[in-house]
Length: 527
Image (cartoon, rainbow, N blue to C red; front, side):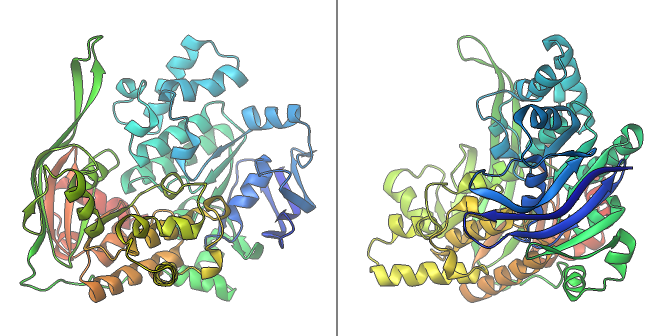
């Protein structure tokens, strides 16, 4: 029985050509259909059209139909749409930080949909919230109910989003890159969870992803999108193992590969961090005294050589991002940080500002790190405006254009705004902003998590080339072991705020010593 029917769907923004053009597919009750394709192919726009969440009236449907259980959704009144969105369908968004209210606790946000749409009491909803958070694998779920979104890692925020989507047991789940921000072990858990929910509830899933290994595991059918159109469709086994279309063949062939760039054997130390410690208060008294705390980083020591790519891996909440922020002096930490022979642990004011030209960061969530009020040109120019005021307008323009080209984007996009781009395209803009100053160290916090497989491969090669050309060093924070293996010369493994294992590539991948590392490797390469 057909649950969702999409027929000849087209989407246009303003007077521009359609970004989705004549898309048709059906999803039966209990079925998983995957939409795959590169960033900007129209996957997310198609999903938002189904939920009627586009920027109307700027967005419009020149043609097409979206029916759920035979009821037309395009042009439906708000009463019909509210029932559909609240009880019949749910969506897991690609960027959890922008989907969660920064001022409300996790408990309040997950409970809200059950109170509004299912009529639960606050007490019943509170109990259900804890169950859902434990179900999606949030660490210390009971203690994290009062946490705010910024106090969680990217992966933890994504788990909260999944819990919210499952709260009212929907018939249709639209999952837009639901495992993008999750570490490999939790990826496997979430995929198993979705599979079990399907069997138990007869849940239908529209699964949007650029990770073909994940798609192969969860989907029964696959639709391949390119430039707003479906170019190939069929069973997952047929499409992914024996693709017919040249575009699909390219996607299947695009996987992270190759060996990392090795720095010179006698390369000096660029960064030496010793006994780094960071704690966050979980509970405070009325007078501000800390009653309990979480040690996010617990006595960590790491070294990064000049021109070296260092990988930092571990599950969500292990302290990876916090450690990266600490090295850049973006997070208050105890311990000593040496950069190019200088102790920067206590630097302040103008001295710290000058140091910023030599170290940059690409954040995990590109949307929240890009100002919605600035054009791409203004965003990429931010570092130059602060640190290179000596540049002429023509020279600054040339540097901006080169940075944009370096990350695989056209200079035609310079006058556009972040909301006009896909998640992967926004991440490339964030990378261009970091690259424009040609820093000596870039902390890359899950920089490829939002990128499709072809752009991942391009980005890895780009980072390698820049590393060779400028002797640039990277701290590459990621849960994607395939990407880390292709890029990082040396790897640190974090668990519960501590380094539990470290070693060179490929030795660490071939013979991991610690059970924790072994589990990470098994989960990554068995997907």
